[in-house]
Amino acid sequence: MSSSTQTPQQAIAALLQEQQPTRLLVLSASGFPALDAFMDAYPDTALGLAGPGRLPAELAGRRFDLALVVDCLEHLSLREGQELLGGVRNLNSGRLAVLADLQASPWKETDFYALALQKMATFVRDEQTLGLFTYDVRQYKQAPDWLNARFWANPQHFGKYWW
Image 1 (cartoon, one colour):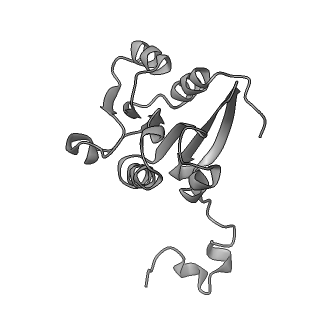
Image 2: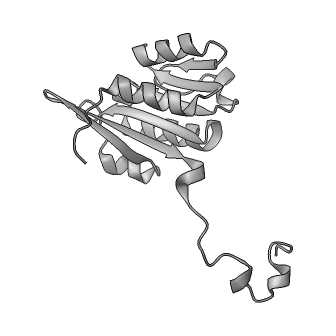
């Protein structure tokens, strides 16, 4: 994938504008301009903020429309990051966006793919390479075309009985 013409902040701002979450979870070691601009434009958005590491108890039991991970994985080991992203993806949000510095963290692109994330963009500046990876449970696996009444042994029972 070639380098994006957008900056990472522009890509995150576009993602936030497209999704317009009413409940947003942000995992970051620092603030960033795209989040500030989004919160100024949508002040009613419920924002959950946490730093790198385990989610605080008050956030761990909540659901969010979107989880955004920026400047976080660079501060964790690969295993800690996998546990964090897997937990957030499975328990806290069906949509996840991760911006990671691939040289400053132990992560490789295949580590994101292993967690079912897709690469959306690559940002290259000097010696730094950032990757933007996303996950959306609604787009993760489409129902196969054979899974319908036409291929069912008893079409009149399709979707009625589970055994």
